[in-house]
Image 1 (cartoon, rainbow, N blue to C red):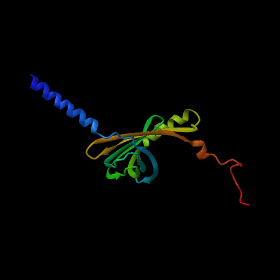
Image 2 (image 1 turned 60 degrees about the horizontal axis):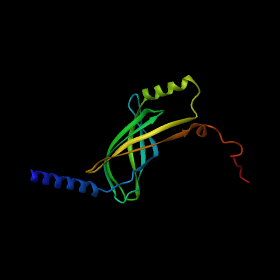
Image 3 (image 1 turned 90 degrees about the vertical axis):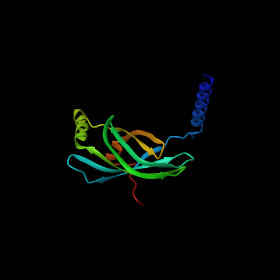
Length: 165
């Protein structure tokens, strides 16, 4: 019995040592760097979303596959995947391109919410996904914010318009 106990103690010690030896990493910073249109099929809107991935860690991130989901007003608007491979350098950044699909039916359902009243001044969004690390599982990311629709649709005030001398 003492041999079994000693063996279990050695295995537990090795397991704890392995966990302690794993590097602690800071979360990735992922933002939308750009969006371009792609040809779609039938009732879908296709876009190429360019994600800027910043790695604030001392180790490079080798990735193999990315998934992203974009929610508007707390409802899924679009999602996409890519089997792209690459590396985000240590203390560096990379652009990862992901084809994303939005259903026209989802867009219509969200637009129907506007007909009950005035269109909103701001649109809240959430971007979530995961980047699959080569050999060690996935890193999840999320970011959120608001888009001010008034700033995008209103003309500048006279004070903001300057005339050349």
